[in-house]
Image 1 (tube, one colour):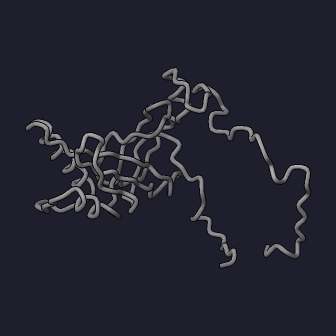
Image 2: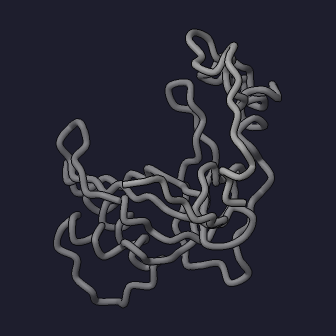
Length: 194
């Protein structure tokens, strides 16, 4: 197979959600049913923003755990899963009998999420706080970035930079072997398709 790329502005790396807020999303097929480390069933939902400045950006790892450890935990679990189903517009009375059925049925469904930043093990990522029906007027980023959250909360990020650093997302300087150092690469304009 030979190299073949067609330029497509909708198929690029690096699209990410850079602000907390409320976003209209679609549940992605990368979502899955799993078990927690303690053996409880869990849905792990991944989402893609469907409108606004962050269209195509992903919000990942929304873990919804089914907990049957006591009656109160069971009621909370039922409400948590039901909230997602209602937010996604699933009709009243529909019966869902397994986490796997839940996840498969949610793929492609649209809703809105409220997300905020959360620090976990030195990394700051978006954390889903609420699931609601789609926002009729579109997504609403709130302007709070990862760096702003880190600075406000005095968190030093995993890459060693403090939250108020403007370099916290810059690539670290490369060290070690560089196959292009000291040699020149010549490519003729005739070899380029554009």
